[in-house]
Length: 446
Image 1: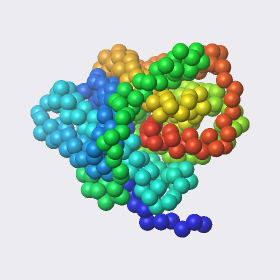
Image 2 (image 1 turned 45 degrees about the horizontal axis):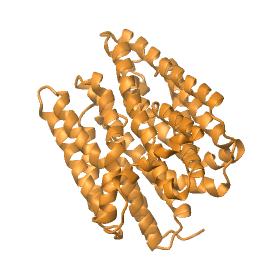
Image 3 (image 1 turned 120 degrees about the horizontal axis):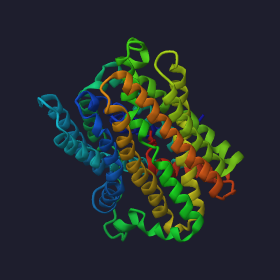
Image 4 (image 1 turned 180 degrees about the vertical axis):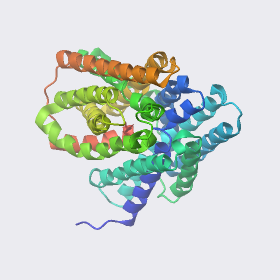
């Protein structure tokens, strides 16, 4: 067994903190918003993450490439993100009535500076590994796994302290940001190059829009956007949905209703395991087969939420969390690989940027806003817990029906049978992580 170098441990700690910052609020924010009377605005708080992700990572990336070393930029972004997040928490804790405008403005400023840190942390890690003469393909994935571990630990901390229902989840995130801001400055220095000519349009992936001239690629990107619609729905509404069972006498004392974050953390645990299946599945079933697995997994993800509960139907919620790993990982990884295979070297990076815009930018933004309208109509328009419960069931089944339609259309319309090589599979895991951030979880994702 190869000896673990100190820099690997340090980078694992950095990834742990990076995603712990996100895990403190990403899953439980909707629950808190519901408690302060902003349930009808939940979709906006999640959609803004997709909106800022379209341009902020590119702008911050160019600044760090040209003028400010990546580890210093990572520190600066976390100082700003943490400051705005704690300011949002202070406002929520001190205001007699929490209003949408001030809270949303402070939150938006925070995530605008946080989202670029996912890419920056990867840049810092790749630089440190290269300086230590360590192969990034071999050594980065085990380091990145600690990001998911940090996300899970943060979720569980917020769950068992009962911060998932109050602004202290935002305080937790802010404090962790400050910790990482200080820690980032201890990382090896990253190079800058003020003379390089990369533009914002290239960094945003706009150069790759010429790929739409190819019918097959145009179809692929359109389905990427349609599937991206599903990415943030359960992040937005999963926690408040599960917690709502506590308002029903039949489920009031069930463990799941009181520990929504802990239950949903199974989704992130599934991600860490499902990524190990990707090379085998890509080799056995090809890109189209793996993406279809992801699409049908989204059908089951939503349908089991709609049919389950925190009592006798708890097993359905558990299965929903398990299939999330396939739904999120298989789509991001196989999609990134297909883009890599179908593009030339001169536009490969911008094509990956376009893939992220279509999925985590446009798709996820449209999806969360549409989900907000549907949930507001079916759930929050009712005043009794029983009527809201029926609305939740209907909403989740509509989401499942949408995912099923997308999967069937993809099966019938998209034509591609190329099977990736093992080398391509390994390269994809690294490249997709560097762009999607596990979006966990991207991917982080999911």
